[in-house]
Length: 473
Image (cartoon, rainbow, N blue to C red; front, side):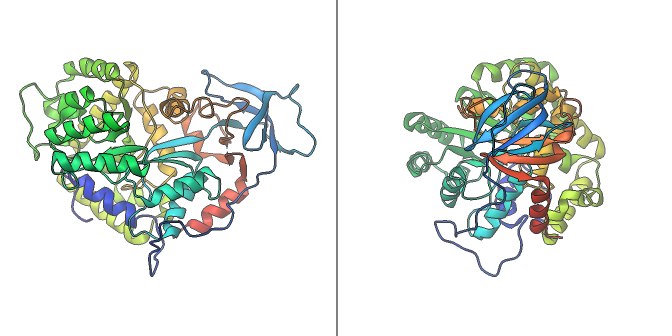
């Protein structure tokens, strides 16, 4: 991928190729079996444990509770309360939590998992990178039939992986050129057991109308991009479940009557920023909230791609050790071309407008979910989720609300609030132990000193060793 991502339809090509080749070790052959190959038990211990004296950020209400003890048994939180009165049963492993902070496991709600001809080892590797960075739920946005088996294995705790929510292959101008094709593909993906439908650019308006009607009939939702021919207003009318990338919003801010052709919007409207009428924003926010559509901003994709940060500076980031050299070289060339194509003032104005829109959506009560679009350019699985938290705070969202985007909001969205999203007795033990207070500095979520996925405790040393084993440079 050496050409710039100038037009929105280019994202389809970028997503398809990047997911297959990014972050993987070279393999002479690909495993194409329907069922994943057998793997050894994942790292970590399922023995009951207790974290004693920790500060709990339960995400059930703003704020934190000092000097707490949390006991985990059989994959669930068995007890949670003041350290002075919460009993740690005999035989339970005690972990010193003094000076540390604990939050629910995070979600990556715009993730990608290798599919197609990717080797099983490559799929497992990407899932582990998410998990070792504290991502305990991942919504795969460019799914494949193979992922259904991986989803089942993750649910059973057989692999080191987030719990997976997955779409099928995307709906785009090529896969659904007609109404009939769209109807058939919706019905097929529902029957296969996918969780939702992924929308990419290029779907015609009449085709999308048929797609949405069929989805309503068979009981499956759709999410992703807003095709330019459909537009934001129509997308909200048809009840997109999530709009990702804040797609369609810059175009919707252009003056009424300025009909856009398929080639008029480049890179999510970067060339339209000067035409944006900000007086329209409040009405668009109100429409989005009334529609009940959730937003997954994925601002990491845009900050990394459009900012003044040079390719050399990006390549020096610590997480680039987990990116294959040939992929990193392609990303660097992509960035150089993008910087040469779009003037600095245009790129800065684009990022400023995106931050303004994201902040307005939050203040306007639109529900939002955390997602970075990893692995896409410069977004390494798991690591990018933490960077996305930082960018949400930079857009004016308070740290607690940004954390909620990746915890309690996700549980509400997935209708799992009774089992996840906050820390409470009886809930699934997806935990992230931190060496700093993320409410004071949200970048503290990167200071991982231990984590649990479904009650499987992974120490800091085990996490480091596992990450080192996955590094490619």
